[in-house]
Image (cartoon, rainbow, N blue to C red; front, side, top):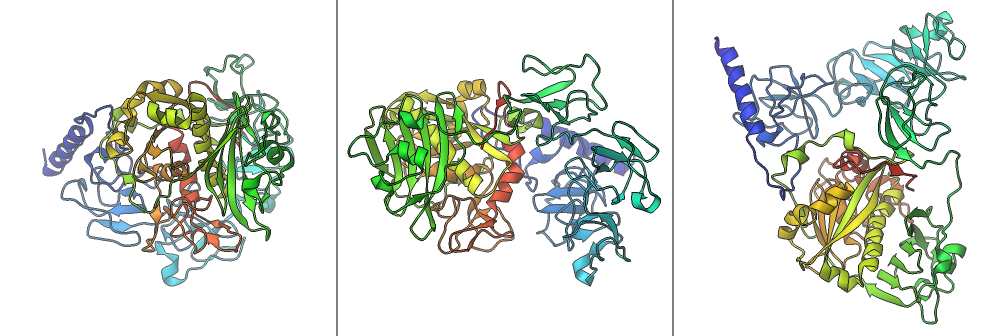
Length: 633
């Protein structure tokens, strides 16, 4: 055996030892190692191809020219072996070192196109303001000012590919530049191209609906997305969403047309042809449902909030706590079992948005609300008699260190699979959250019912930030509470035990995340960074929205201006959830406050982007016991 083969077999054996020789305790709560980590767990048992389509991880076996992916982008290997041997870290983004060449932030595929200045290679796909271009060179266009040509034209460096990708979600028009397999949309539906070039150049017209010709395959009247689902026997493809005219959304497991007996499941269970994704979907577009529980709320003399008037009339006139403020319309009311949940922004007389209110209404006539206004920050709880209790939030410095980077985990939890992904009828990723309380915390809140209302309120506070920051592809869902007799403290040791303290209940309800609530503790909360568990004190009702941002992978203010968007933002007057936690937003450059100041920076503070990117992962830790019902606003 020559030395090269011996070396490869040696490293392959080392790979097996590291990948299979680790035992993890159930209470361990760390995520899979970072793509940039030197942790041996990142060595894959199944070797990736080492291409942009199938890149390897940092410590995977490599050869010169193999493509690897880290958290900042793509790198080309300059050596033989594994980066684990000798510690060959990726260099900073945009730089090379003795072991790696920098190869850009994006893959250069239609599914992950590069921008103009990203490092390129011949055939890499780049996206400009007007559409897509194919690169004809190696390197960065920014280095030599290799600009895109005008729309519809080519030059020595770029080949024009059209304004759209050519998929069911971004179809091309009839005359756009095409390639075999590209999807185009006509007046009657969708067609798959069988040629390269432009249909306009040779008058290659679409055939009639339902037919093929030499240039086009018919691919159905609908896109096969949650927004445009296909009907039962419409042409399908693996992953297409069906359910037009039906109250279910089903994912196709086949290509072609369903056979005459390939029926949708009738029991909400998957079958050989269909995967049930969501149920109880509106067949026709409906107006936002009003509250049905607001009129059950009693208003007695001395009450600080007149909930009935607030909800049904948007009036703050009879709510002393909100005097001088105007209510912006509530978000659509979402009903689950015996509860309704919604939120609204609060404006002052100058029409500046100066706060918010989140509300959980109980069918029996009680409510729990979080109010953030210039004069009050805290909760207000009303029992069924209309007796209200105001609890100001205990002041906390949300800039204090409050994250833990996990270092070990249960091996089963390492295997996160999109098969566990849960979505609603609109295709929104649903992250199921279970609240775990100590009995002492429940007693302090006021009992089991109050604890349920409080937990639903906490989850709504995070959803408020997602809605305000225009994050559309993910929402959090309350799936239950669990109570243990132990009066656990709010500290890192308790955080590390959440997965065992509440394991049976979390497993039963399919919880993606566990939010622990302690009776009291120093600081507002503590959370694992980019993992499933957080711990809050009940006297800090705005802590959860902050800590779950850490669960998503975010950090506090980017004070150093690091070229990394996973941070909160302080624009001088508004402090988002991760950077001061005084404004009801996750950082985003796409939204501005009432003063016209952006609430983020595309390069240094964009938590909205991070939530969008992590949505599938966060909704895939566990599978819900049954399909998601309805739509989450």
